[in-house]
Length: 109
Length: 119
Image 1 (cartoon, each protein chain N blue to C red):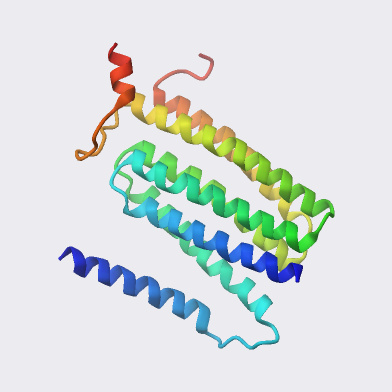
Image 2 (tube, each protein chain N blue to C red):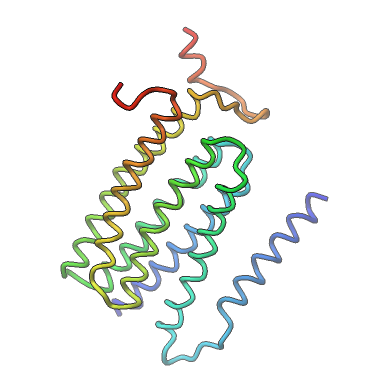
């Protein structure tokens, strides 16, 4: 029973990973690519690690998987924010159909 | 023209998934281990997409984004490997890889801003 539930979580996580990587290929801009892929891949990998926890139960491996989930959920938004800020400061242009750029307006004030 | 390109991509994705999940034909008794063997092919496909973005990225920030995504994918790959082989130390490699990837991406973001590392 636990193994079947773990396999269901792993398949859901694999689907999220695949669509995140597909967004990395298909979107037209750095910011769009970051926006589409970092959330999908973080949630998919967390789901795979939760499947590992369901396989192993409350042993050492399962507790390490839960710790790894917490670490990923804390560090992936920080790295994405730093990457977007660095890309904007290094002068990467937005896509030509983008609507607004609030960070540029804040810098000009 | 645009709809033709969408149709070609959708048929390619459906053919790849059908080829991964239908050969050899899964039996009802050992479908769990067969499913775990096929998960590796899809993760390999995701890693190949990330490597393609690193290869053709127009700017250097595109390559940094793809490298971040690849580092998170490898943690999931280590978790699936730990289930499939039964070894308990693959998840340790996953935790260490996540920590190293985080610090590496922060250093790359500092480099993209054009500052030095001690500012």
